[in-house]
Length: 386
Ligand SMILES: [Zn+2]
Image (cartoon, rainbow, N blue to C red; front, side, top):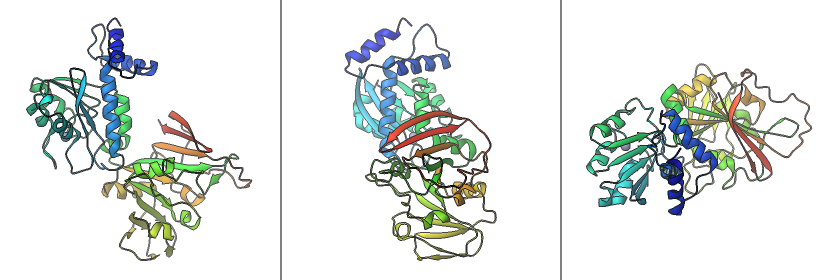
């Protein structure tokens, strides 16, 4: 790797963060995946600018669905001269904001963008055109867009216009940013995260850990990030916090209540009075109180996770939390429909006798990409089904 060290020094000289061992390993892995060896085609600081793209894209967490989050940075002579992110579906894409920010300095500059620029007329003109018209010299892309109407067409258009294009810088980071969007593009179904809290003696708890639903708490952040929260009707009888985000400016998730074998349902004021919309999914006629314009009732002939996900997908939801607070919710679990698990271990001994976690619908499976965090007094563990 004769060319790697000078690049690292270059990053250091510019006062940017010195790459860590993990970043160097990612860089090498990225090169290997793309079959690069010997001559180095990616400068070390490409990773830095791509991470910056991801960072600014996250300013729109919870606001872009069904679109992905995207960030763009324009760099000229080693300096960031423009940056932008996609704030909301229907509004201009990240590249447009970054090019506007850069103005004439965009000419002969390098554009870093976390997701492949679009090449089609949607609600906004194609970003490839904007980049070409701005006379950008090089475009460095985090990942190809899995959306079939974009997939690789943006890259092809840029290359055909004589622009130098590199794909796959910090690819895993860019994929993680839009895991729900990517899953929905590949499967047509929303990305599902199973969430629950456990006591130290392994029993399911019907409450959250201290601070979880407060600003900055993991539950408040999940409610900001995800399009919808699916809860069972039994959840409503407990003194549980409703799925609401207290993050500044957060858009609230849709509340999806599974009303199984019920003829009437009384919504707690915390749900009925919240700014979120609520959908009650029932199998047969049900009386729901209090009546509100924000509460809809939907009937599904077959009440299972597959039909609930199909309904949510048709409604345009990309991501759902399956929020399990009681045994009733466990009946919803089915093989193959859950992608991620967030488990909160609370510092409580429940002393309850019942069997723990009868997740009947799931077979033995391994989890990968584990992450562990101590949040207030609880331990948070997340992992993905492979
Ligand atoms: Zn675009």
